[in-house]
Image 1 (cartoon, rainbow, N blue to C red):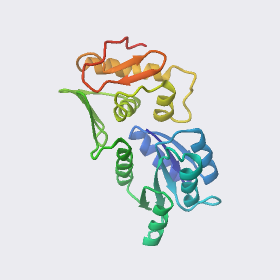
Image 2 (image 1 turned 135 degrees about the vertical axis):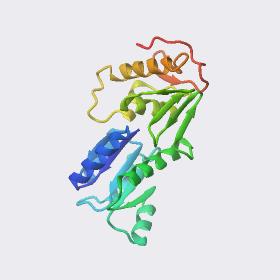
Image 3 (image 1 turned 90 degrees about the horizontal axis):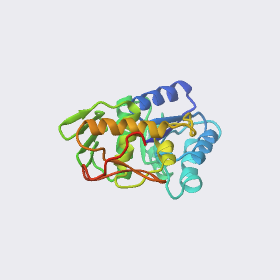
Length: 237
């Protein structure tokens, strides 16, 4: 999942982004509303952590434009971050399209939990655990198992599998995976997606059976919903 952190407090934005990256998310940073809207037009963010009080275009206006102009058909979830803590302020933020509201100062653990909760909504889930076939992925505890075997995944492999598991049985192109699992610094002309898919497949296979991730020639990859239903594939494809 890809997140945009928008805050004119450079140190805070950097700290939030660092923490979210440790959680396995791809994270970009913007320090004002103009930059945030430009990045949102270029990238398909799943969630925006948005500061309310910024010079120029404030968070309320950024939120409105995200909903009405930038991505009206598929807007990102918006978590408003602000030092304003009155009921009226919270109502104003929610009425402008924010999905949730977190008052500064906040504990990072609470922010991470709210991010997980917001991202679950789009996947139609009610808990932090994803289950597809014989796979189980706990987004809160960062644990993945296949049957009785626990997998040891890198942060990027975990993020990639999490994205696959939010869209089971759907064909995902390399471009979509690059957009939602990697940040703006990823080189689109490298084999980074193919290589990471390959290492993830090998670990899934080592945990039992063939890999449930299959190649759809000319289109991308698909995670099968029944364990073992996908045909064997070359993990280097």
